[in-house]
Amino acid sequence: MSEVHELTAAEGLRAIEAGNLTAEAWTTACLERITDRDSTVLAWEYLDHSSAIARAREIDNADNRGLLAGVPFGVKDIIDTADMPTGYGTEIHRGHLPGRDAACVAITRSAGAVLLGKTVSTEFGHKTPGKTCNPFNPAHTPGGSSSGSAAAVGDKMIPFAYGTQTTGSVIRPAAFCGTIGYKPTYGDINNSGVMGNTPTIDTLGMMVRTVEDLSLLRAVLLEQKPVALAPPEISNLAIGVYRTPFWDQAEPYMQSYMEAAVTKLAAMGASISDAELPGIDGTFEELHGTISGFEFCRTVAWERFNRINQISPAMREGRMKDGMVTSYEEYRNCTRRLERLRMEADDYLEDFDILITPTAPGEPPEGLQATGNAIFNSTWTALGTPAVTLPLFEGPNGLPVGLQLISGRFKDRQLFDSSEAVLKALTQI
Image 1 (cartoon, rainbow, N blue to C red):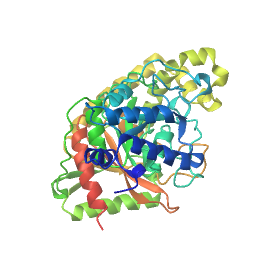
Image 2: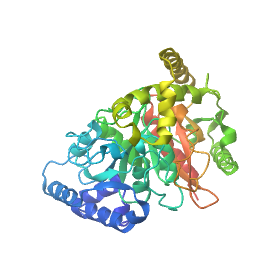
Image 3: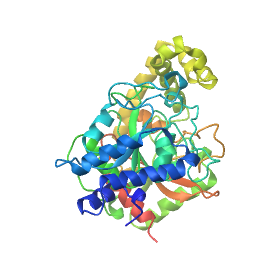
């Protein structure tokens, strides 16, 4: 068996079921890993060792245990927790106690999972970085805004963590930290208790280390019975290759990795064709930015009116300022256009099991002053389609590079099956 802290959620649950592991031992191993590594990675905003151990012991002694009984996890610090501070990535709210768990936290805890603490978020889940470093090289960004969640899972401190995505805040950091990231279909997972950014687009997501865990966690959050993965034969997959209007922003090695992956899948019998999403061109980023700016500056209205000097200059002069100069008419023109594009994308994606597209321009950039380019993520966040990034490649500096898979809205389960098939096919020796 792997080192205990390295276990995935499903692996650990099987070990507990077989009598080879306890929730307390699993939690202790993860906390020891955090103690060993977090002075370098800085993934955690808040930890509660004693409460986590006490909860794990309760689970070990319980007769009626849930689907995630004993699984340690972390939660991004813009997601409310009743018994732990939630600071929303800003000094303005440091030490704030919400008094109730977000829906995703309440459901996950009710399934028996053990919350260790809160992971670092960027400011309000936006662009200004937190303290977290990349676990593969601390001189490089872990991505954002779900930086701590991605780094903690990528460094094998915990088997899974929750994050949020409004642009690329789950998928990109997951790729940068060498783990699997998942952004569900917009609206599938309840956002109650998650600080809003852009409600038209905001989506709760997760970082894990196996596709199997994605399937399990989605079932838990939807309070549905888990369904085992059923990966299809590669020869039965219809795959679209979507280079996007921003292909020239991908590093040459990213382009080469993606083309090589497509070539290999074609050789295994997959039906491959180029994809061109209707209505998506180089102006799509402006549409996303207009909607996000208008909504975000009103989401943080209290902070804007009462704590403006504690908001970073980058935020004040960036998305917040953009939102204030956007008229209601401009905003509504963009939301109407987005509604049409979502429907058109639904129809177009019916012809494909998955699209393959870059996760990011390349490996995580050097420096901690920015979180990287989300140009290959915002389309899917705005369209509301599910997305998975798979940790398949290594960049020229030895850092992780992911590949992003997309399916049509409400086809998350099929996306998991296809993702498992592609992951196995591309990692065969």
